[in-house]
Amino acid sequence: MKQSKLDFYIETLETLNQPLSQNLTNFSCKIKIDCNTLENHMNFLMKQNLVPKRNSGDKIFYTNTEREKNILRYFNELDNSAFVEDSGIEIS
Image (cartoon, rainbow, N blue to C red; front, side, top):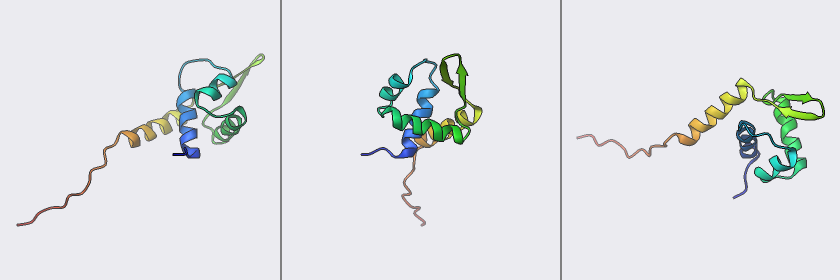
């Protein structure tokens, strides 16, 4: 089954939330997308104020925001919630 853009964005945010420092190539391999697609995802996430970009000398860092953490919590709750099938109520 093909992943949706939302799935890719969530996976990108989850991977960014890990404390590991990675370059763009390793990062794109980890989430299994090419560098151009990853760059497009990062640009979208930056426009949404989810991932600010920081420059430190010749290195670029993407930092976490509280908004990003809230979105990840929300989607984790959705994944972990149990959907109960309505079996009906018997009335005597």
